[in-house]
Image (cartoon, rainbow, N blue to C red; front, side, top):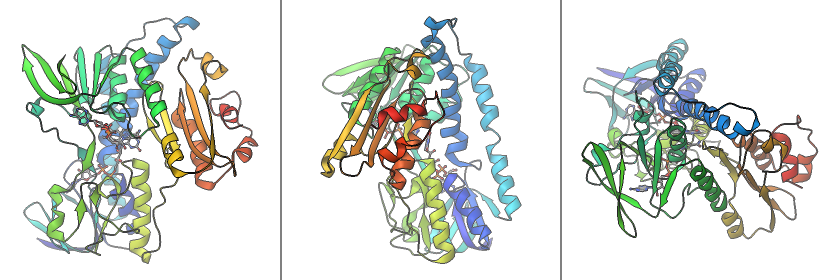
Length: 449
Ligand SMILES: Cc1cc2nc3c(=O)[nH]c(=O)nc-3n(C[C@H](O)[C@H](O)[C@H](O)COP(=O)(O)OP(=O)(O)OC[C@H]3O[C@@H](n4cnc5c(N)ncnc54)[C@H](O)[C@@H]3O)c2cc1C
Ligand SMILES: NC(=O)c1ccc[n+]([C@@H]2O[C@H](COP(=O)([O-])OP(=O)(O)OC[C@H]3O[C@@H](n4cnc5c(N)ncnc54)[C@H](O)[C@@H]3O)[C@@H](O)[C@H]2O)c1
């Protein structure tokens, strides 16, 4: 079957969804295709279900944390019930996504798409679509582990579907996902180990803050082992053994091994080379307008393009920018200034802007406001120990260069700093705002003097 479209979008996740609807609104004949249930990673097995589980873990952690303040412990997690309610929460995503496309008059295909030529895409073995514009929004997939026994390792999407949680859980890789799911498993009562290849966890975060987050995780009983590369897995007498290769070869017994070793652009099945679409290991190579540098008919957005972030917020912004460029010509560039991100740990760690090391490298003159929040009422009223903040303020202008927060509500409070960074609001201007009090956000005033 040979079909045509003005715009064919490959992938229906955050990026593909936003772009398809925007192009349809702009009057184009739009078609979408996905080889999995519609809706992509964020809603089905990424941000949303992860947060759902983390929210439950947070209640358990908080209850324990506040046991000295009249709260009765232990609060416990009923894992099978939690997974059932999480599934009820996220199972509706494909249907809602399809309904939105249908209402907008977008043609839907189901199957794996791959380029046949620079202007034609095959969907499965029976359909081909020739499109004026082709958008690659295929997202990212877990980085494959290529050591012996890697087949014993499950993905985070499997972890979120486990009917029962085994007693010992091992995470390979020490990024956001390991910290987050590690805290979830720990709150459910599991013995948790995180194996991290580098000398530190959370490599994209400020070093000092990442170390404090690791300390908080360890204080909650999570075993973090750094400087070890997982190099082999096998099943011995019913348990999994993962062998690390670092300074020494060590065995880490567990009942479940989860891959949290990073994510890579999901491009092989789409066969970019057949479409004359250049790519690197970081994704489709795009110009400043998110258009392929080698095939002007093609745009790439979200986790599939070689932009600096793998975040839902960024995927959505890139989709809006690319849609505008497709509809009205190349005018808009994505703006990566002030993108906040967060590790959903307990307590959460968030940041925006420069780390201390990056600020020093930049040659800018700045001061650092930093300190523990343990004595602050916002920490004391929830029994929080280990909260910390670090704000980098440019000397001459008072502009916020970077902000780093470890503590309850850090993922929300960081948005104030993101606003300041994006719009160049100085610390003295920020101090003039009257925040609702007492809240976590009203602490911002004390961080930016
Ligand atoms: C566990 C987890 C937690 C996360 N938490 C956060 C968070 O808290 N905050 C945040 O901002 N980001 C988070 N992220 C990252 C965020 O989910 C992604 O950045 C975002 O979903 C990327 O959107 P996308 O549209 O580019 O790709 P996706 O949402 O992955 O969509 C790509 C779609 O393309 C389809 N596809 C791929 N190849 C083909 C093909 N050849 N043919 C047809 N269809 C194809 C896939 O099936 C998929 O549906 C998390 C990610 C994970 C895995
Ligand atoms: N809240 C958020 O903002 C959020 C949450 C989750 C994920 N994400 C996105 O998802 C992406 C993936 O996150 P992630 O945590 O999986 O990856 P990551 O890239 O942040 O961390 C993975 C770590 O695993 C280590 N590693 C790789 N192979 C290893 C091995 N064999 N043994 C031991 N360690 C090994 C790497 O050195 C790396 O430090 C991130 O880029 C992030 O942007 C964002």
